[in-house]
Amino acid sequence: MALHDIRMRYRGSILGPWWITLSMGFLIAGMSVLYASLMNLELKAYVPWLACGIVVWGLITSTLTEGCDAFIGGGPIIRQSATPIFTFVLRTLTRNLMVFGHNVVIVAVVAVIFGFWKDIRPFEVLLGLAAVLANLSWIVALIALASARFRDVPQIVASILQIALFLTPVFWHTEQLTGRPAILWLNPFYYLLEVIRAPLVGGATNTDAWAVVVLMALLGWLVMFPLFAAHRRRVVHYL
Image (cartoon, rainbow, N blue to C red; front, side, top):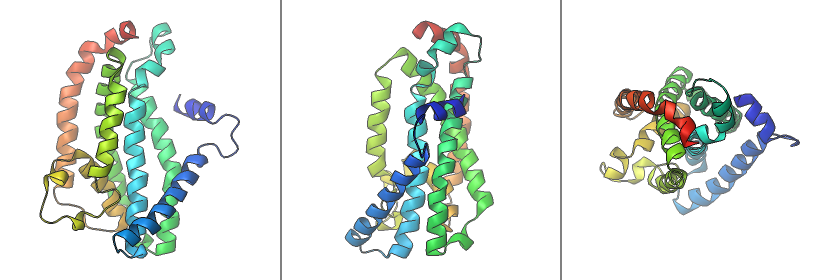
C-alpha cells in the first residue's frame, strides 16, 4: 500500500519522489551559505550538520503530519474490509521511510564532498533509526486515533511541529547554547534527532539521548497499546 501511495502521488511525474530530494538539496545548499555566514561557521563543519539535520527532521515531521491522516485516508478500505487497523499506521511509516531512503542520497553526496564519510557509524545509525521508528509508531497510532475523532488535531500537530522546528537544533548547533537549557533537555525532538544525526556526522552522541529515546518508546507503547485496543473498533464509526 505504501508503494502504491508513492506511485499514485507522483503519477505522471518525470522524477517522482526525487523531486522532494532535489528541492531539499537546494534548500540545504541555500541555507548552508546563509546560516554559515550569519553564525560565522565554517562550511565544512556546518553543511554536514545541517544536511543530516534536515533529512532526519523531514522523516520525523512528514511521518507525524501524514500520520494524522492515516485512518482518515484509509477510510474506504477500513469501512469495506477487515484489514487490521494498525496496518494503516505501518503504511504511513513505510511510505515515509521510502522517501527518507531517497533523501539519504543527499547525506551521501555531502559526506563525499566534505569527507566525513569515514567517520559515519552505520550500525549506530541503523539502531538510531529503529529507535526513532519505534517512537514514531506509537505517536502516529495515537494522533491517527485522535484525528479520526477530532478533525482539529492535524492543525494542532502542524502548529506544534512548526514551533518545534525552531526550538530543535536543526539549523543551529547545540554548542551555541551555554549550559544545559530547558529548550534542549525538555525537547523530545532533540533526542530523536540526536540518535541518528550524531553517528551520521561522526560526532559523539549525547549521553542522555539513548536513555531518553528508549524510555520514550517503552512508556509510549505502554500508554498507546491499551488505548488503541479500546478504541480501534470505533474508528470505523468516527470515519
